[in-house]
Length: 109
Image 1: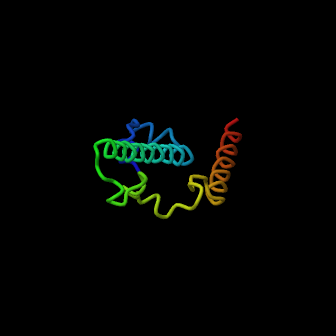
Image 2: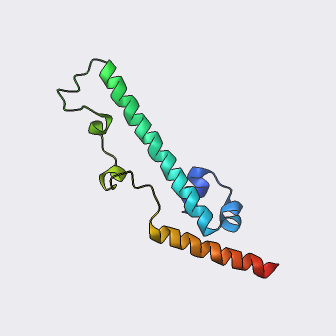
Image 3: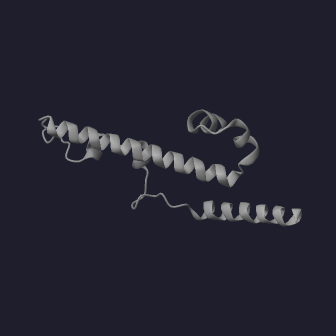
């Protein structure tokens, strides 16, 4: 996780180690992966469009939609409707973390 935040996302080492809590890291990493997936989906659509205007016979190859061109790993196991919603376990974990953080802040006051 350290490599992802400091190396790929570009967070400062001290900020990652000392300022972010678990909930922040969870939300930031989910946002990063969502943006990455959107970028790959956009690239797939652009490739499909370029192939279709360059007179490639896509129908002969059995390619009718951009998803026929390539299926990404996160799409193969995704439930209907996208599956981007947090699970009940994720929500409960975030609530627990927020309660602990609130209790810690109240103890300081």
